[in-house]
Length: 632
Image (cartoon, rainbow, N blue to C red; front, side, top):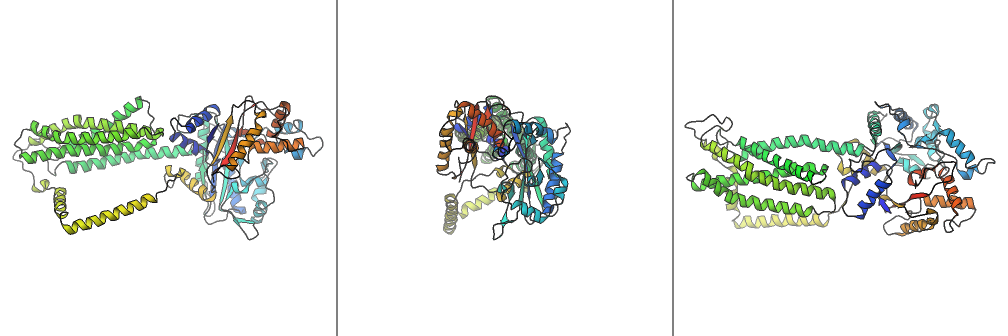
């Protein structure tokens, strides 16, 4: 068995993050890999969330706008001639056997299968507009004449039935932010959910989470563009969410980091030029600063190459490594340069350049070696994390620290020697061929404001009153830190991966607000257990066990295929003995086929068979079924 958390409105997002947070040597990862390998998803979800903070969406005007958006979506055509009709997942809807058998001459499979053959299966879509469909299709006139009263009467009906499928609708799953009057009648709502199901033909577990072929991905892109460009009346917004949305936006954020990386490096180079050198035409170390940055880039490139060759994955999390390694490399560069400058001040410039660099590296080499080894050790230990994405990041960082260190003590140090010889030969900092005569540095360029500041700071801190003040400040900082530590709460939201203002971030935030759940939903997948006909009582026992587990809702394991199928069998048998008493093989497979092509049609996607399922034949042996659960 395997478990995986999935919600119909966020399935693609869940799968994408499952890839980002892959586990090593953990049962969850083994189960997830098994599920994706043995039972790849056959469908993908594209949905639209229509929201309004102020307007009531249960009005004739809002439903007409939603219907207009639906028409745009079902009439989409991509550059590859992909339309909703050939991209959608299809389901052949039949009639409920309990109602059909009350009519003489109407039976399964003859009557129901003939209806299914004629219908040729319908595209799967779920939304409130289904209430105004009839016999599997929409009438423009019927929707365009809707009034506010018509809408409220329809949603307050005792039983909501889809005019597309004939199946019951659940209002709370399609309408959010519902408000009711004192009599319990629905009077308004702030959100409408529209779900469209597309087929899936390609699985790429090792990819970016986009588990579909190019045609479906192209259709999803057209779907997103259509929703984002659609205009509603009033302050109504529509946000799309498709299987490719998370990968697109998360990947876009990573690509956006590249421009920030360039800007950041430019700023840092400017900063290094100011700090490392002096503000005059000879002792300014602009070219040396560029060499230092180049040494960091060489270290990053080497680390990436080695880690990639060793098979470590590169993910979006790694995009921060260049900034982190830049900071480590610049720190090493500062230590080397300052050690040399300090050595020159101490001996007054009387020692030869070779000896001075030897003395400088005697001090700086020890310092940067210890700090680099400490960083390497810290990242190396963290690389043992069971989260592969974190382990990979730490491996990249550890190798990055090593290579940056090596390039600093070799490439940068060599460049430093050449640059210092240039400066002592009175050559221009930029135009090295220009040798200056009788050059003297300006007084200001040799003034160190940081040294002056910390000199004053060192003298001040020896004062008794300053000591007391610093002790009080430190105590206050410690207290506030401990307070925050003890009140630290661990949390996780999918939207944290996404930039604010993106359509998917808006979708997830609105979904959390208007369609709150009591906890994370999940499924137990049961597969390859032999003959399911003899195991249905055990499946029921597992469902009952889930409902009594601490932390799960009471409805866990009490809804789904095994429950509805048992109810169906008991109606057909005229008793309440199933699944306690197993059916014989012929009856089990006959009832299973009848159930799946009548009242249990929506369970097709939750089951897997050893052979193809057809309407006019007994159901083939089951290979996999699911039980749903919900955390409190």
